Length: 129
Image (tube, rainbow, N blue to C red):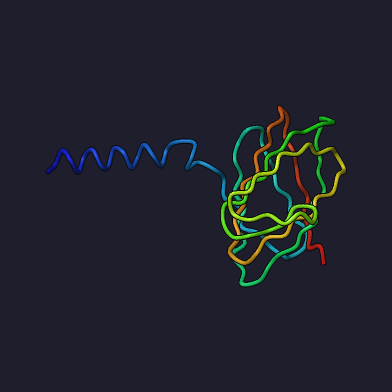
């Protein structure tokens, strides 16, 4: 019995310390301007904890001209630049400095962003309404 409990704890600790569970979590906001740093190849998870949809306009800043980027919907629905997305949808795109992205997240929505480039990307976001 003790071996089973020990093995279960070891598996749980291993799962929590793996890259799958190590994404940085961000809560979305509608207040003012907020900035997010998106380090290279580190998953960043964004959650809308409000009871209503949030529409944000984000301006991209980077030292590199072409920045590959992956956008995955983990829960509920949303939109990226007017393209509707549902749970499980993934969009790969290349963003450029100064480019504006329009992101909509449904109530309870959750998305994962991964900067696939080699340099840091900063997104300065504000309410799009």
